[in-house]
Amino acid sequence: MKRKFILIAVLLAFLGIASLPAEASISFDIRYFDKRIYYLEHDPIFIQVTLTNNGPSPYRFRLADERAFSVDFDVRTASNRTVAAADLLVRRRSQSQQVYFREISIEAGESFSFVEDLKNYAALTQSGSYVVQARLYPELYQTITSTAEISPGRTLSAAGRPLESNRLSLSIRPRLMIGPDGIPLELDVETNAVLVRERLAPDDVVAYLLTARQKSQWEKFFLYLDLEAMLSRDSFRRRQWNAESEEGRQRMLARYRQDLQNAVVDGDISLIPMDFTIERTIYTASTGTVTAMQYFRVGNYTEIKRYTWYLEKKDEIWTIVDYSVVNLGTE
Image (cartoon, rainbow, N blue to C red; front, side, top):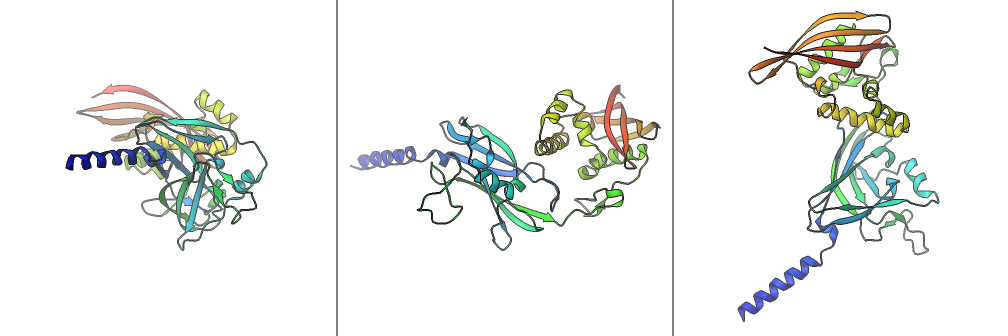
């Protein structure tokens, strides 16, 4: 009799697991794609959305070409007040249009990610602290338009409740201050001091960048880098850049900056120099080159590289637009 009860319990447990919805095995997480100091009405706020299939079977959902019909963001103030939807989001969802989508299949143990700009979803018009949560609609976002509608803007998913992500804390500072000659002022993450692009000589700009890399001070490292020029050095990326919208270009810059920081691309400038020496500086009124010997610790050896940094002068400020490297061996 005891064995019979055990078998029944096991069978019921198995049936219970088998009846769980597919969403129960899906992890839905969000994080900042390029965490930085955010300013009111300035930089985009890119959020990386990731779905991970922790179950034994493939998970399928619909992903709209216009992501506003697949994902939504619930943004609340510190006092738990809901932030209104961005005007762009309202326009996208209120138009009479055909929603195109593709079916995404996530195999067991795999993940799928995409990046969205939070400012396309929430009207973040005031500085302050916020809490951000994402919702994913596996069968696309729909607005209830029948007479049974309970409240304006109420939404539903054909597959039931949407998936809800973890929550992120968001802090938005007041509008970015503008310094001399219209140059934006940036803040040092560590000291909270204002960073200003100054009228440094080309060799001082290179020394500033290399010193910042030695100290892993990324906000200073990027201060004098012209990311658009650096990104456009590659012909494939340049064609992508020319074909992109303004929003797409902002995403490309954010992704390129993150890839530089992670040494995914242009790894030579992400290396941390043990020491460096400025060899030669040549410049005209608008362009310049700085040659530097840079030394890197590799195990028990010191690797020596000669870097040539190319700079351009705009609005009285020198910025780095390109570089080349020659390996000189080890000692």
